[in-house]
Length: 288
Image: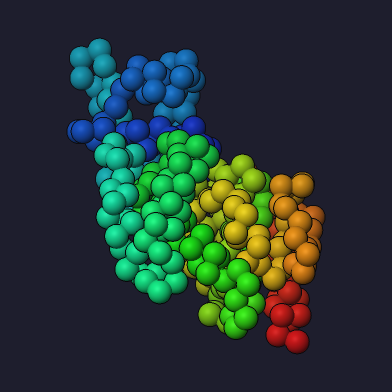
């Protein structure tokens, strides 16, 4: 399997949804009709996307009578799970998330505050990305980011904080945040958000960062929240217009950058290197 080609094919959100539906099936396989019904698409359209997945070596086709069944190819399972995740049918155990975060933030937030943030975070993620994978872990991570921000608002002694915001939170803002975390470590609190967050981060973004030794980790697109803005010393916007509320005492910068999410890898590298230079300059200012 040509991984660069496979990543380019996976960048299409419809194909990512098809793979999640296949992985989420009880027996790990699906045929065209139920996929079309679940996606609200015509069968020829689904067949077209399946052909692209077949040609890239991401799925396998097995004929059973008049039906063709599609499953994730054995050699592609790790790549598929790492980039698009699995479609999970069970509801997230929010009570468990609340208990764990209440223990983690003991002394910083009351259990009632934690419960409110967990419930609200789950609602926001469902509203912004209804078929996103790994909902329980995403709720936990998003709620933790918001609780950190609430704790940091108005704190006298804390690391400087930077919030990167773009439209989908799947390309520019994620690259900037990953590079700043890589360079600054714990010396800077780094957060990201999107005015209209996508379901997942484009595979080409992950690939371009990996090439320069910058891990993206378990990051994912998150909605923009008020406390993340209020906790920031610097808010960097990238093509999201007037989505960010303006508060006194916060430094705002707008970086004019093309959205790399649907670009070929060669162009993504150019945007990455532009972002890298801007991040280094910002970090130098924070350290001055």
